[in-house]
Structure formats: structure tokens, C-alpha cells
Amino acid sequence: MKGRVFGIKKSTILKISGWINLALISFFVLFTVLYLKNYNLWFFAFCFFIGLHSLIKSLLFRLDSACYLGFLLLLVGASGFCAFYFDLAFKYFYILSGAGLASILTFFFTHQKFQFFSGVLMCMSAVLSFLYCNKMLNLAIFLAIYLSFLFIFSLICGILFVRYLKNPNKRG
Image 1 (cartoon, rainbow, N blue to C red):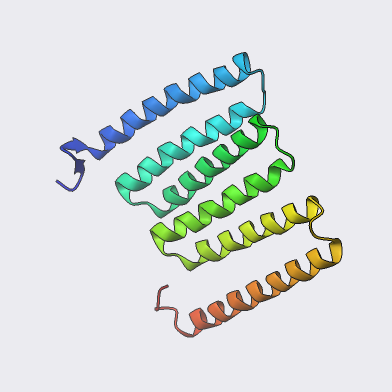
Image 2: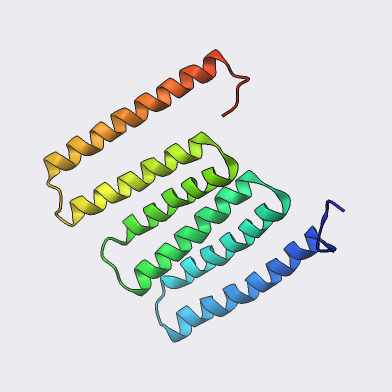
């Protein structure tokens, strides 16, 4: 009974999830456009529920790509919805942080180092850019920190790539 969860087929659970998420997408898209009159929110509501469906698919069938796509859409949808609903300044840094956090969360489930490193790069880029835009860092300090971080990041990626080339059979 590997294809069943609590006696229900996994494909049936996925179909039920699809119909529930489709109903929620329809409701929230209409709610944001017709009631809230905010024409940016429908996209983030759509992303959130598609991401939720993709995460359910990932959990049921143990798919790495569905896990990343699910976290990415879920977190981008949630951060974008909050940023546009509350009309926060520098909205795109929140969305970039959501994408970085999605990579880090995917690392915890799939143990792929690339996901962790790309998530850290995106989160650090968002944090440093946010600090610069809020005038907490001047341009010289921002460039020094960011370029140093990029150099160290590139160096680590280069070392990992050379280690992989020497022993391509070793995973991790």
C-alpha cells in the first residue's frame, strides 16, 4: 500500500487538493479584484495557492522540483501579498527574501547544497539592498560588504565545483 495515505490513493488526494485550491484561487482572485479593489494582489493569491498545491504534490510523491516550486510560489505569494496589501516600501526586497527563504527551506528537505548557497545569496542580497535603500548603509560600505560577500561566495562555489570535478560520484 505504498500508493495510499490512510487508505486513500495519493492521486485522489492530489485531485481533491487541486479542486480545493482552485476554489480558493477563484474566491481570493475575485475578492481582491472586486472587494479590495487592489489589482496587484490577485497574482500573489494565485501564486500562494498554486504553491500550496505543489507542496502537497511534493509531500505525496517525494519530488524535489515540486518542493522547490511549491516553497517558491508559496513564499513569493505570501511576501508579495503582505507587501502590496500593507503598501510597504521597497516591496521587491520582500519578494527576493521570500525566494531566498524558499531555497533555504528546500535545502532542509532535499539536502542539496546548491539550494542552501543560492538561498543565502538571495537573502543576503535582499538584506543588504534593503539596508542601503533605507539609508542605513552608504554606497561605499554597501559595495564593500556586498562585493566581499560575492567574492567569498564565488570562492566557496569554485572550491565545491573543483571537488566535484575530482570525484563526481560523491554526492552532497
